[in-house]
Image (cartoon, rainbow over all chains, first blue to last red):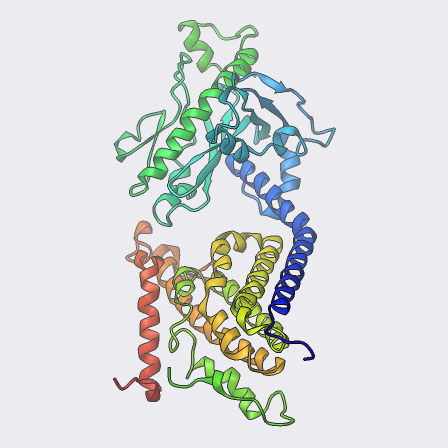
Length: 279
Length: 227
């Protein structure tokens, strides 16, 4: 070495060059691999939406199945009113690349928690789908567990706009064996058949009970033993998000049900609307 | 710490890459100088990542890549790195490689990346890394350094895989995600078998590592410390 390896100037120059080389290498690698990573994230999202409708597919098959099952998507505002009504149909082939699908619900939730976004400015995506003869509305939701975010998708049957057809939940880092159980069938399988409002239209949401004696409640599920904070987070998430979607669900159902009932109504009107199955 | 490969000077002229001494660089860490059971390094990830065999394998391959590549880069730069900032320089290279591994996992094995996510980042704090960089790569040529990295990460890997084998088999009744214990054996389906949920929790990894250390020292009596 012609120069003094231990001089201050060489030490500085070495450090600067090393950091630049490492930084450039990482930046190039990241940019090169980002499309593959984004695609994975996108497919996982489709996989989750499909899982909420009890459609289990491998991640690679998700885009095809998604296009097949999802007929459109919309964005609602905080009052449950459709703001982006671009209800893209299958023919346009755009059902996946819609504002609703591209919306980052997690980011919006974090912004809301950090008071960057006001509650009344938040937007809520809805995916419209048809699976095995059921018209479904799939809604995403997000909340806070013990260690980080918890999220899920709930599919509501359009026939009455209040019965849950299926659901899926996931989490970032809840305790394995305790809070992490919300992502397992033990928890998820309780949801189908539960209702988010009374037959007369009163909103009830879905309650996650601590102590499993309430399994007969049509508006509640049994929480996870030892996962109290996670269960409370899921409870809060379901209550808050479904309340907003409930307004929309009621509008949609009213529109479908109002055309002349063909059955002789013997019950009170409100009860009848709820129990009818109109083609 | 019985044997110390690090202090062996490589001053022999014209030595084949797979000479007897260089072969020892690979075989030594597998048993006599195992990073986990003898040097007791890298225990953190051995506890955290051994619930499933597939995770243990991915973690092992990631560590292998980082240790071998890092050893080679640092060995190639060993005459240029100023001694006053050598630890920082090693750390920058280690961090760069770990981040690279993380990006590659996320792009190509997304499901595994999600499960081992946090721990890949923690490879940086794996003492095996800095131990090999500082103790071996800074004083040796590129070839032997690569072999040393390979040996040490293989020594780390086989312990991880063995621990994961027992934890996945007794904890989940499966291996590599494939169910081994027939469903009909389980108590829920009328059998008399239960998965041992203790196995899924980190402390059992420590117990299994302890048993491996015990067996290893029974067979290899020169490892027993005379205190």
